Image 1 (cartoon, rainbow, N blue to C red):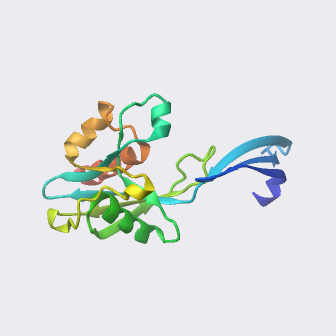
Image 2: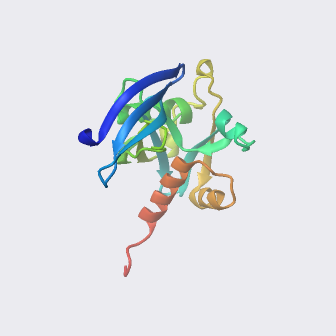
Image 3: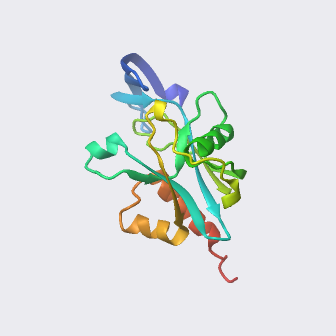
Length: 195
């Protein structure tokens, strides 16, 4: 792509919780024409997300917390989500283990990486590393809930897997990363065809 992009200007519009930039550039189309475009990109760092699953009890650990952007978009209830957070200076696995301890109150073993997609590539630079992990009640080390001094007020939810799947269809779970992880788990639990 290097020979198909000519950047003309980059302007920082905001630098607070993340960085919002406005970029003017030319993009060479597949037909060979140069097209002048302007795009805004928002960067706040990469993140990680995890869905702990207790195979024996068929339960998952989730969080419920208020999300202002969802609220202003018309979703008035706190969101039910998989545990997630920014990487900060850590690698994805270290970061998600830390987040699980802080938010869920669980020290997780056998954390497994799934994939690292862009979550909204039209305007966000963030990539999110997805993980699953096994857990049991004996892995609990605290009440969780996050850090109040960071503005976190997180409720820990333990739901049956079936209830979590139903929550997608009845609108209680509307968070895309959580839906992706629950669907991944559903697909991995299904026996192979012909079995």
